[in-house]
Length: 174
Image (cartoon, rainbow, N blue to C red; front, side, top):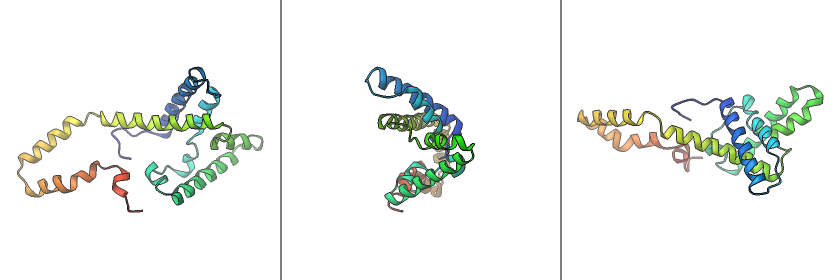
């Protein structure tokens, strides 16, 4: 994803774990859900760890269709297996369970996923509020003042695709 500020896996993981812990506290204390905030926070610390080996695939591609979703889940599971295999033998099973989230109940798993999505939403909001809005308007005004028909054509017909997200760019192309 293009971004004003590149985010690394550690930043995303820490933010997701903090959000997951908060959501789990709310679930337990406000909504009487049977969740462990501590277990949820630890699971969130591991939720994308296999991406160290596999890399990340943009969400719109991961979930584009059942075949891609199934294939990516297999890649994630294999990444978790390989990462766990790097641990001492006595830690491998528990490590793999954290990496796959299998230690969580359904409510806890949902909270980790919600925290992951909240982290992505916050990132989107930060990007939208970047300091480039004024610079964009200034560049557009300068281009219009040039009276260059080729540039005007590009602005009208081609530039909009640069503002499209991956879903919009690839709709119907997979």
